[in-house]
Length: 396
Ligand code: ADP
View 1 (cartoon, rainbow, N blue to C red):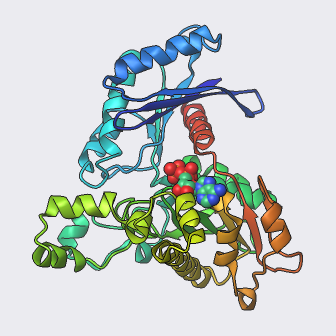
View 2: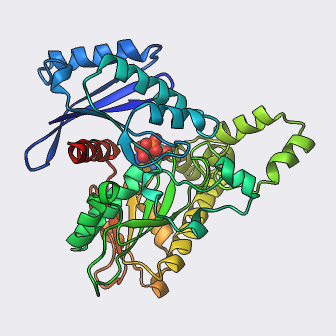
View 3: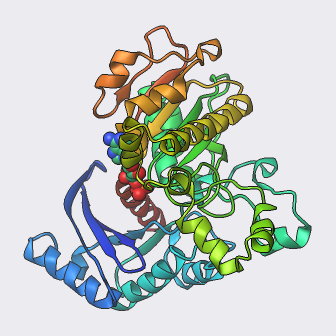
């Protein structure tokens, strides 16, 4: 089975082609992409021509499905056929995710026209949060705001779901890994009577970042809120902010709303704090040069991440595993050490040598640490491909 995963940006189209064998094991056959795309239709033609020339597919008939990592839909989530309903749901929330929703709405439309016989599947980034208790997803706003859609949705669902499944495997809990695998088709299935709850805190730290609490493979809460610019300070997006700040700067700095929005999404986060860059590597280099604002940006990021880890430690009554994933989480041992510092009273002790040496997936906690700490590399495209295949298979 060949599954294409399409990553659509406002002017870019990236793709990966996975082949699944009979046992469900995936191999990556091809990846590529185009920048400065003005017409997704011709980009799709180019992609198919590339795959044909490389001998991976002879025609669209050799594609068994296309998966899209859609972000946020109005009144719609999960892993679902990418049809009119998905396009309407993306359009319905274009104001909340203006950089993400319009390209997917247009791109999916083009794919439907170009590949009429090929099943298209949307995996919403919010899908993993469908079972979060209401108390953890509601804001204290008037009912009319809630009815309009103002609530905590959660993002990075593909990444955190992968962590939920993989950490369960690493902890020898195949029952929970299987529960995670079937989540979008079957919902949370019953757990084995008397089994110890499996409590995982997943930290996706990258260009954008979030922390999610997971019990028995199902999310119980997340740092992300209404939009992907909430929670931790993001690369150049603001993260959590007191709502009073917006009217305050409009009145005192004389900024129009559109400019406030631009500054909150383009000039805030790690960039705004450091004044150096939105890339943590540049910030670390500036810290080496003695830049105090760069140090502050790092300190705020660490503080905020620990704040959210703490939130899930109470919600879960402790944890069995703390997991780091994505660009920053996978590649920065010093940051991981800062995030795990002085948690021994909560049962978490890092092994500094393992932490420094790890290059791929693995455990970095001390042998005697009751809380395990893992690094699990993110592979969101693979998650989309797997879920696309499950969605198609469950409908056949
Ligand atoms: P995205 O969220 O855009 O998919 P990634 O998960 O690839 O991004 O993460 C990108 C971030 O990872 C960048 O901000 C970069 O600073 C950070 N990063 C990558 N490698 C390192 C490293 N060796 N040390 C610190 N940060 C790193």
